[in-house]
Length: 109
Image (cartoon, rainbow, N blue to C red; front, side, top):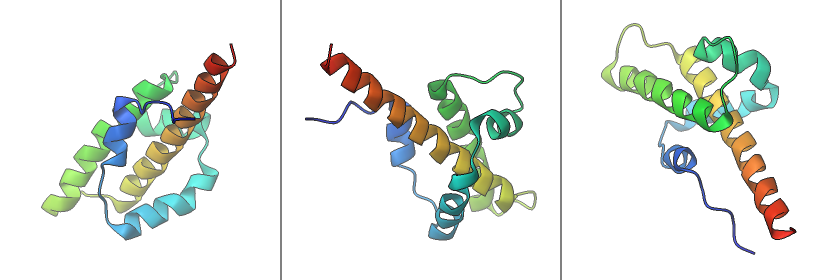
């Protein structure tokens, strides 16, 4: 059985290269990620977007944060960066879970 195709945002996320310490901190926080609570705050939204849209928005926001980190901006916030990475990982996990269950459903139909 082959894996379902990876949506564009997931392949973009898979290509990200970030410092190991940031990634490890995000992995540590992933267990407490709650989409309903955290995504609205992180994206400043009243209603939750689709997982694909959320991932796209988070990728854009994280890219801005990463640019600030690389440039040494004084307003760079490592906590915010880790929270973005946690949300990215959480949304990617949810999207992969959804893609996998959709693929399994279509093969059993």
